[in-house]
Length: 323
Ligand code: CP
Ligand code: NVA
Image (cartoon, rainbow, N blue to C red; front, side, top):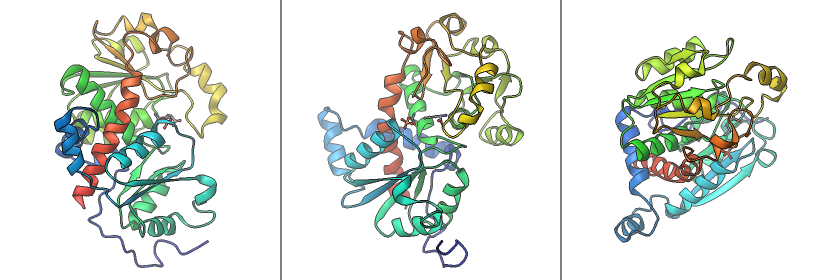
C-alpha cells in the first residue's frame, strides 16, 4: 500500500468544493444547481442549445468516474453530462482501480487529480469518499455510498419542481428503508422547505445522527410505522429497494420486516389525487412497489431517470464555476 493522507503534503486546497451529501450546498447554491440543470439543456430549443454551445466548462478536460458497485443511470447520466459540457469521461471499475487494495484512496484521488477536472466515485464505505475529498485537488462527487446518494436527490428535486412548480411546502412521503436514497432525499427536501415524512417498520428508522443532520437543513423528518399516515396529503410518494447493494446478508430479515410497506394502488389512493409516485430505480415490482403503481399513470420513474443527466450537468457546471 502506498502513502497515507498524512505522509504526503496534499496538493488539495481547502477551497475545493465537493459533493458528498446534498447539504454540502447551501439552500441558495442548491437552487443555483437546479436552475443550471433546467437551463443548460442540450435539447433542440435553439436559444438553449446556443447557450450550451458557449458554456463548455469541461472543454479539453476529463472527469474520472470510479465504480465499486454496478450502475446504469448514474454511469450513463454522468458520462453524458460530461460530454454535454465539453469534457471526456473516463469510467473505471473496482477491479481496475483497486481502492485501498492496489493503492490508497488518497493516492488514487491525488493521481486522478493530475489529469481530471473532477472525480466521481460510487463506493461501499462513505468514509472512502471523505478520505478522497480531504486530499483531492479537484471536486469529488459522491455517485452513491452506503450513506448518501446526493445526485439522485438533485434529480428528484428537479422532477418535483417540474411537476409542482415549486418544492417548498410540498409533502414528500417516503415509504420503506431509511437508506442512502432516503437520507439524501430527506436532506434535500428540508433544505428546499418541503415536508418530509418517513414510514418504515419498527426497528428501521433514521438514527439520531441522521435526524439531527436532516433537522440542520430545516425541520426534522416526521417518522411513523404506518404508511397511510406518511402518505396522507402527500404530493410525492417515494420508495426504494428494501435491500441496498452491499446489504444482501440482511435480505431474509428485511423481506419479513417490510412486508407491510409495499406501495400499492390502495396506498397511493390515500395521498393527494394529483400525487406522483417516484423510485430511483432499479425497482423490484411486487416487493417495495406494486407493478401497477411502478408502471401506472402516477409514476414518474422515467422522468426521474432522464433528470439524472440534467442534474449531473447542473452540478458539474456549478462545481467548475466554484473553483
Ligand atoms: N438510481 C441509480 O443510481 O441507478 P443506478 O444504480 O443504475 O446508477
Ligand atoms: N438504495 C439503493 C439505491 C440504488 C440506486 C442501493 O444503494 O443499492
